[in-house]
Length: 335
Image (cartoon, rainbow, N blue to C red; front, side, top):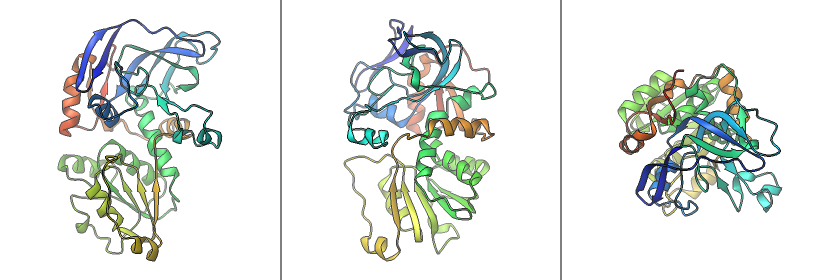
C-alpha cells in the first residue's frame, strides 16, 4: 500500500509499504479520509517526544472495514466507520478513575502507532465506530475533532442564554461556535487575525467577528470565553474578557515552554473559573450523534488532497490558507 511515512523531524515521504495485518481484536480500515491537524505538524517538526519514527501520522480518520482479526465480530467487513485514535492504557490511576484522556501511558493511532495517511490502517475494533449511511464523507472525517470540541464543551456549565467569545476561527473554534449556537447560546463572537477566516466565521456560526475584542459591544464581558488558538497573547487577552462569575476554557494547545500572565486577584475577586480540556473523553459517539441529527459541518472542509499532495497540504496548513484540510488516500471523494 501507499503511505506517508515520517522518518525524522522535517522528513516525510510517500512510499510503498506492507499492507497491515489485523492482530487479534483489531480490524483493518481502508481509509477514505483523514484530516490534517496541528498534532501532525508537531510530529513532522519533531516536537512531540512520544511520537517515534518511522511513523505514519494521521489520527482524524474514517473509512470502511476490510478485514477482521481473530475474535472480532463487530464491526463487520464493509462497515463504514470513524476511528477514535486514543489508546489509554486502562491500568493507571487516571484510567481506573474514568479519566482515560489523562492516562499516564497515553498512546494514539497516528501519534505513537501508524495512522491514517495511508491506504489502509489496522486499529483496535473497539475504536471503530459505525457511522450512519446518511453521513457524508466530509462529516465522517470531522468526527474526531468534533469529539474533542464536545469534550471541551462538556467541561463548561453551558447555561442557556449566555454570551460566548471564542478566540480562533480555525476548525476547532468554528466547531465550538456551531455547537454552542445549537445549545442555547445568546450570542457567539469570534476573534481571529485572519480576515478570510473571520468572513467565513460570520457566515457560518458567529453573530459578531473581530480582529480585536475591543470592538465587540460587550463592555461587561462574556459569560464564557474559549481559547482555541494556544497563542499566549490571545489567552492573556481572553482572561480579561470574562464576565464576573464567568468561565474561561483553555482548549487550544499552547507551547509547553510558554507561560501566560494574568491577575490572580481578578480570578479571586470576579470568581472566574479557569478550565482545561485535553483530547477526547466519552465524546466520540455523541459527536457522531450530533452530526447524524443535522449539525452541518461539511463547509468546514475547504480542501481535499491525495497522498501525493501531502506536502502541498502541509504548506497550506502552515500558511493558514483554507480551513480543514483532508487527505483522501484512495480514489476521489464523491460526497
